[in-house]
Image 1 (cartoon, one colour):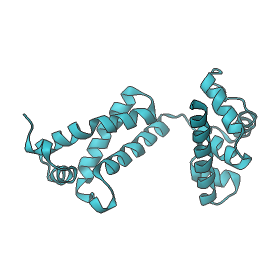
Image 2 (cartoon, rainbow, N blue to C red):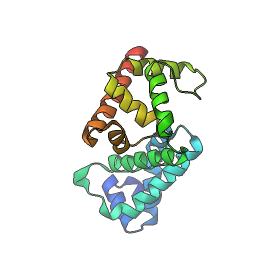
Image 3 (cartoon, rainbow, N blue to C red):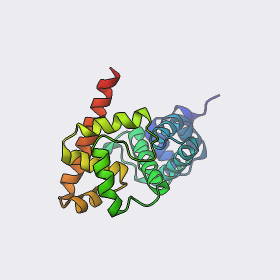
Image 4 (cartoon, one colour):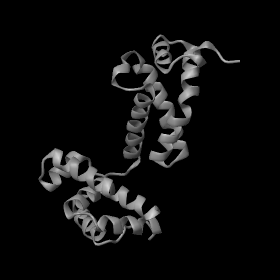
Length: 188
């Protein structure tokens, strides 16, 4: 019914995967397909794209199996990190070019005034997100808008705002964290 590979530990599966063991590869995919696809879907919000990301994640894991180090984290953590990075890359690749510099200031001012960006159709979630954004400290709100709505990387946010890269990353991360906490508080 189940092969020996199905009963092997996660680390043993990765080691066998590095040796191109076909039953181990099948067991590896079977064991982790749910979490990998689930994460890809939660990041991309597109079932077809999530399938592509999941497939690419397993291919990357197979290619990198020999470099897996159990001391750095569990197999699941390692695989989900690969998946998350691929999903983010897929979203970035699908975006059209980031918002032009001239439009960026207009986008910042309207979004920071509590109005959702154009193209959202005034959806309730967009309005709520814009309201949460307006409650952030101004520097965090600007960084979040530049990164999330404007499609800028942390390095581009740093250059645009004239701040160090670490400061830009902190502002983005802190702003998104505060927005997440506000959203969770609203649900409760």
